[in-house]
Amino acid sequence: MIGIHSFNAELSRKTIIENEITISFGETHPGHKRSHNEDCYLIDPELRLYLVADGVGGHADGEVAAAIVRDTLQEDVAKGLPLIEAIHRSHRAVLDEINRRIDSNMGSTVVAALISESEYDIAWVGDSRAYLFNGELRQISRDHNPVSEMLARGAITAEQAAAHPERNVLSQSLGVSDTINVAPGRIRGDFNNGDQLILCSDGLTDEVSDTQIAQIMTRETTVQSQVKGLINAALKAGGRDNVTVVVIGEKGDGNHCETNGTLGGLPAVEAESEDNTEHDSKVLLLLGIMAAVAVAWVALKIF
Image (cartoon, rainbow, N blue to C red; front, side, top):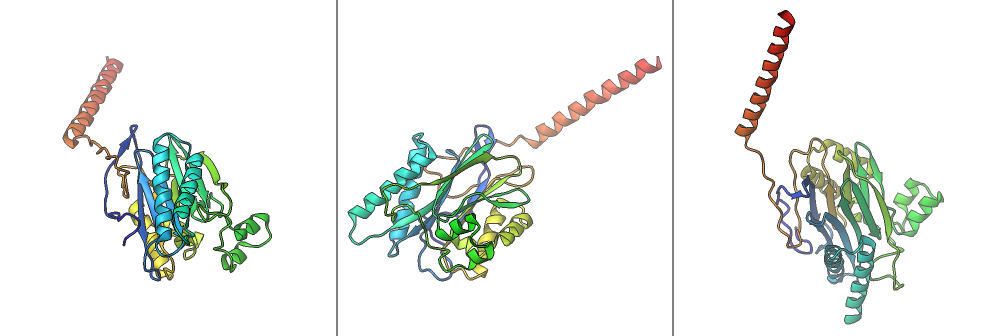
């Protein structure tokens, strides 16, 4: 399994950022029909930046475009630029690369999330999607293609959209757009305990229905098993395209965290777990104090 930059899909570490634990996992797979992988993803716990990019263009051009988008976004967000501005700059960076090449028509989609405090800020161009899951699954991005726009207007049903022959035709992408500028979609909202965000390429959503995605997210108990379950479902359904999934946030009490992917050269800080013996002694001391107070109260009542 090789994407743009080969990631160790088994890497697992605890990361503390501003005293909060960010839990995430990502993985990419070339699928069964493609000879190479034009998808890539980013997990940067330091920046709390997460993205999936799906390159297009063939002859490795798509891989190059996706890598440019990923790297430009990471660099610009690290400089403090807003997410939307960083996406515009990544679009221009791909156009610049096209101008340096002959007969190149490379491009890429992107869906990117910034997590801040208890909120998310998500922006996208193309048909790579963002979902919010908390027992129920909700698509919070809107694909940039004519079929999605017809669905939003009520001109066609969801079933008709899923089977439409032009469902993968993009109205916007980074690089190959006929216009100098693009108009990224954007949504912001609360990111509460128990909420999870899913970022994915169309290699997942073309093969796996929203109902199936929700079932897998419900059944699996860790972010790692959720990601692997979603990718395996896409592969079992045919795996006709590259498939990439990133899940952010975890169900349950958050006692552990898993992160993987590129960390942008920024080392993760290992979480310091409290010594169990010391923790147990503190609990026993507290129970002893509570018992002594109870005995004293009873004695006062009697005497």
